[in-house]
Image 1 (cartoon, rainbow, N blue to C red):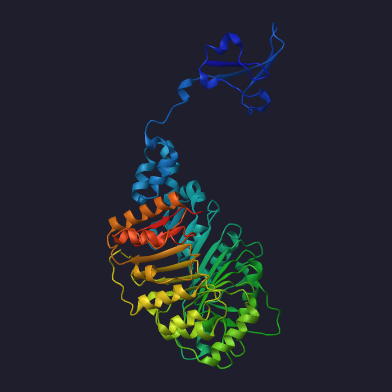
Image 2 (tube, rainbow, N blue to C red):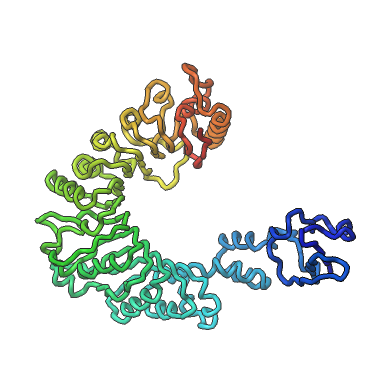
Length: 515
């Protein structure tokens, strides 16, 4: 054992200071040292100073990790890449390994992939149930009964497939109510029966009860798909979920619409995912008479993800624009999931005003869509055109007609632009060499360049760009256009954007030093 003796001022006794390891030397006043456990304080007969003795009974307990797997953090990282079967094997190695590999195994429960979860003995669930955070594909009574174990108390994400089984629906309402203080993401999906009349649909629809959303909910994301509920209940759900930020509505039927009732205005909901006719319709549209608009519930709405694919009339779009200006004045971002050019162009032209962020599929880019974007050129700060392919390589061909001309006009017109993401586009470097662009405050650029068609060439260009940014702080002397290679020319032209801090040229996102 080691005995450490200190004066009250933090200095070692002269008789022992030379014999103890330097690790135990202190150079701070004793009052600044952190408190130590299991200390004895006493006064010696020959000294007037207080002496503290800290005893380590067994130095063998202070083992130093000599292998990466001796560290719990490393084991936990590895566990995230293993299957449940492999995690189960690792759990049996030792007590130290047990919880590190049990956590990822129990973190997410997917009843569709592993039906056996519903048959796990209650005593096992009682031991590991507190690790469960995400539960998906809950569709049967036995799934809900499994989740009713009191040791499963910290579920944060829950996905439920509702059916006409009334018992399952009631049990699910009880489950949501039980998780109300931990659940942050809730996804409820029903199934509308294809009928010809609204009366037949109402008889066979899946109805949600307000009892599931009691006050105290901490939900931040809610998704409702093909279910039925009264309009008053929907308003109350928003009231009971003050932290709600994102809402998805897909083929939801709202019943008993009463314009005389007070409609709750949620000041925290920022993101909406819905078709246009789901949240707003003119006099001739809508499943229910008089149920014309839900936009009044979203006064703080910032971003709308739209799924409509049909072309709207000019009259409908202008009415929508007026309604949005009154009910959702902060709406400045829109995402179109369709690649129909006329659809995107019509909404940009006449459906919105003063947009700052626009996202749509790169395949929808055309002259008419470009004109729609230029309607917002004074406010646009972000343009994101998503590629059709899930993975883009440096050599992937650009199949959009006249893309060089269209992208050039965007960069010359939108002077406030800070983010330009067009991963499907292959840019000709001469665009930046011969044309003066307006978006000199660009911060994020995601494009590909002709000539940089291999991973090696792209990485060399990005590394050279980062080095030049560090060395010259973005200062570029005219009229030099860089070296003879494409990589050097691209590097030189990108140096002109002093605020550029993130670049993607076909391989990976690269973060640059800024001034």
